Length: 212
Image 1: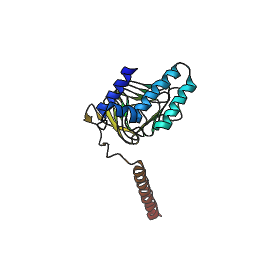
Image 2 (image 1 turned 135 degrees about the horizontal axis):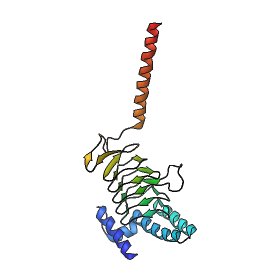
Image 3 (image 1 turned 60 degrees about the vertical axis):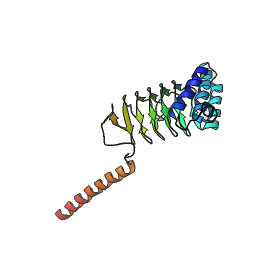
Image 4 (image 1 turned 120 degrees about the vertical axis):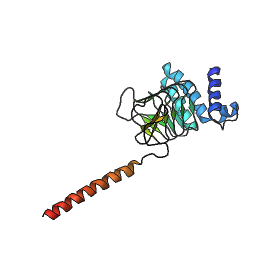
């Protein structure tokens, strides 16, 4: 247990340039507190004490504003940076060396049964406010941009951005014209489609008027 605690603290110190000491991480980092709380809750959940497990996890929500279901499976060296508003669902599986930022949801779509939540491979980064929804698989070494909404599988070694998320880099090479800043606006896209449809109807009406 103590080896795991030291490993988690070392992970945070390595990944967060704002972390000044192990003591600071232990006492002040909500992400660290949430991961340790989940370890305790998961132990009780595996041993059939599910009410106690949920009590621990819900107490953690009140203390940290991070909700991790006790049944979620989390690998080693998992880092939640900042953490406010993070939600990790019951059937979520997270590999080793993953990092997620504040506002991230690893959740369900509301239409699935059984396995309802995503599976993340190793060394995955999920940016601020991103939503990864449904029983989908996110490959190893994947980067998900801030604000992205991921609804389908993403293969290894990719970067995905947008709503819905699209792969724009694979194995270090660009495969699309998007990046983390130039994310398409779905409202603007729909308005443009409607303008084009209106223009088309107006031209058809004009042609019919001339024939009449």
